Length: 209
Image (cartoon, rainbow, N blue to C red):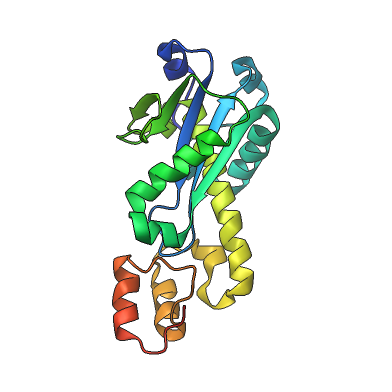
């Protein structure tokens, strides 16, 4: 693994209480988009933490270990937007709203936010950082929490709808997932405005909501 993200951007901000913010689940065909906001209470405590990096760069075992440490040692807020909200707002605006909800759910108010991506949610004081989860440890921590929370949600939904394989594909448009949708139709957890789903709704009779 390349060098891990650090506190450089947090210190560069000039603020004492800085939250890293990231989301998971913009690309899947179903389930919520989930965002997390993370504040490190003591930067020095990271010397005792497991590796904290972009969630996509960690193994599932390493990501789970990092998630548990973050939940026990940091201030964490989580927010989400439902498939219905995604269809109403579009995925970009739903992601921004999920981030705002995550920040609002922090038990401490941040002075400044580092947000992964190229734009800030409205009325959020901070900085958008492209590739922030590879640069800022707070953003990396948020990416880990968001992914772990969302994956857990999808595993839970898979118990109710086992035919779609959500515990394996997390709702992403894999070939087997698309085949399952064609065979079984869609349900209330699907994002009906997403192109593959919209096409299947149009072409498959007997879809259920």
